[in-house]
Length: 112
Length: 117
Picture 1 (tube, each protein chain N blue to C red):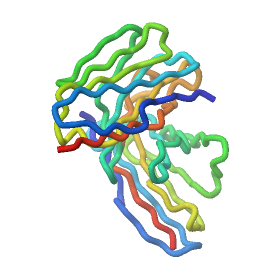
Picture 2 (picture 1 turned 180 degrees about the vertical axis):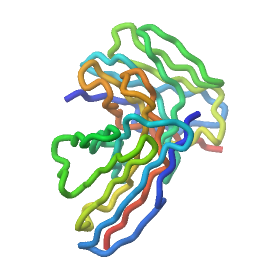
Picture 3 (picture 1 turned 120 degrees about the horizontal axis):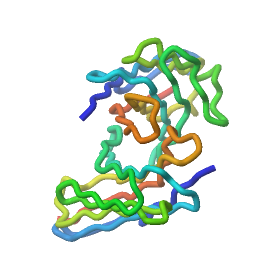
């Protein structure tokens, strides 16, 4: 089945630093989504990408849909304490298009 | 953004009992709802897809007779874990989509923590 490889698995940064994480796949995806999950909560949508090459920002967050449709990255600029959490990429593929495939997650920890 | 609620937020039950979890879309009509399971420090795994008024489609390896899904209205889907066992303990999360189109975004509920003793 389709799989997403998300990296890094965890990040330990200082407040104010920029963050970058990415997802890759051997399969083509039509839609890429980035979610953030806080402990004991459901994922919250951060950014949705619908077209290859699309670059979208949401405040300090920027995400891009790779031109090959097999990858996406998420950048967070000037990190703040509330950015702590687990970030998941998710893709909607060509086949079974309604079914989201999730990456393994990136756990972000910010040192004060 | 769209709001999806789940009830209960957590439940503890004895082995062998059944537990029902509700998922509601509060401000939109959800043609399709999805049920996920998430074990500690792992990603979300899709269990089943339910469309209003029809039978749910289960992912490979998910027992349909153990995880009963009902999507009787455009705003409510329920997941019943029958004859629960300790290995069913997990974080169950639903999501809802306003139509069946691939591009439509899924909005997630806050999750239900199930602990089976």
